[in-house]
Image (tube, rainbow, N blue to C red):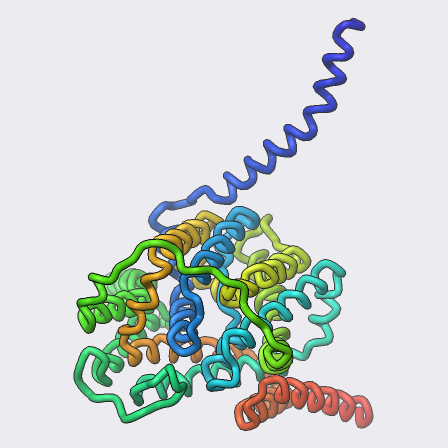
Length: 448
């Protein structure tokens, strides 16, 4: 017995570590297992309608390093899938992107990255300190909806300008009206918009009266199956692929210049002006959106869609913070998670972390293999089609305010929106919205 004790003791000392590593590996593998191969692949494209237009617009209008962005977002997606085990998307920070796209030459890549770093740092502190829930309770939903509405409308107004006018991105200005015909004409843009409208609305549920007629029931079932199939078609991704094909047609010689390899990765050079403008114009309006949509709403929706896999606000806010504190220094687009993207990927068939992981692998490979060549292709991407994609991304962001019901909440939301748009500062709109909200609360308290 005595001779066996050292062996037993040694096993007991070593087993906890080996067991914990085995459990970790098992959990990661379980999180990445496809529930259904084709459904997961289809789900991976569910949020590209948001990702593609924003990244594409920033690449063309602000010289975003697309290769670096693809590499970092690819890694983010793979890690997100491995950690959480649900199709939780990695999206661009929409408010920061809206400011960059619509604000002209005063808000460029250093300002974009500075705002992403500041937002990430604050989210990391809120998550690590456990203050996230407290901040969420103090943040009026009407003010958040006002910022979302203003940034969504800013997206759509810029998108309409892209569709109607020829753009000179090097000078950040519009030129003459776009021609009706051609590979970048108005007719092409209108056809693409109509295609997205028809496909996206195809799966809309309608209230239909019950009928006892067997033929009518069969016809209704067949109609619902067709609508469901059409709704699962990634319309924005198809339009994007059309734009890529047209880019090659418009400039066939670009194929001769193809080069393989990642784009050069450099640390972004910041100035005090970039930090100031990035925080005021980017971080302040983005922060309430990130707290509500990227953390709180994501945790709530994950518990509804995936019982037993509830996410904690602490964990999600820390991962969002770390993503931006790493990638933004190298010029990768500021990123977050999103409840809308999670819902879309679930709708398209995503059920596991493998859904976003396979998307991450595709982005990583694309960034490493064609990082230096992608921008040359996108220089000939039809700007009218870009405008269409950006239009629907803006509309989707603006439509989040439809859950605002009371007159008081609508008043605060519209004040915030009006000041943000007319004053060209979402930060000023946020401050005004907060002031009006607390004035209305004070009025209720004094005259109740």
